[in-house]
Length: 220
Image 1: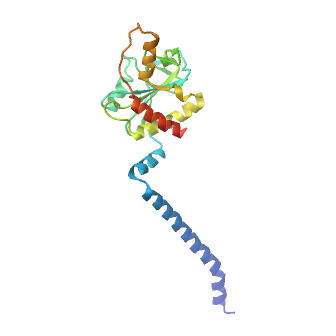
Image 2: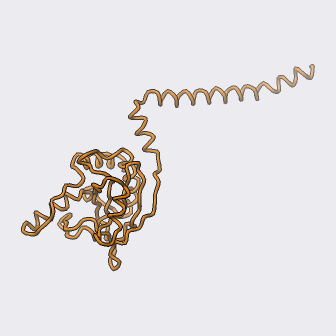
Image 3: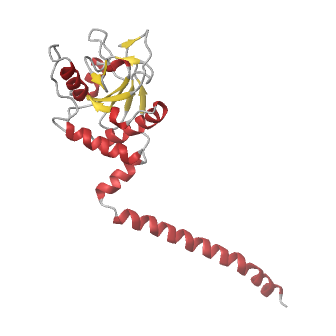
């Protein structure tokens, strides 16, 4: 048999395998493009956001209890009600006001870590959760940049908060019933101590709280 014919026959399996690989990659690419095309712009945005790991910045607050350890039985959600992230960070780190938080989450999802979960920070004031007083000493405080009375949380804020919370919930076995808003623990305090003075400031709105909790449940 002619050598050129013999070599051609030997190369046929390799050629077939190459063609099969190319065809398989083409089908795979088509499936991805088709899936993205069938998603609405909103669904596409959410899908991309869910896969994102958000920027984390260490931004320690001095407003902590140096002689206490956080018992970590719950989480309290706040909004800063400040116009910019710079204002919020300043308020939560100046020594004069003595207020702090464990994390501040900007509208783009960036997390400013002010203290680790086991540290006590001063974010709740007079408060009651699950019949227990003094929520500062057994909860993690999350501050969302902005004011939910004026504008809802961004999807990035929600996804970043869930990314932050999932390991904490798992490590400390926090029940979802103990993830609440500042307004809820303040109202519980006022009900338990009706004759004591306590401010009535609205924090995270109930609508945004329900929206957040719905997405948190879905991702746990």
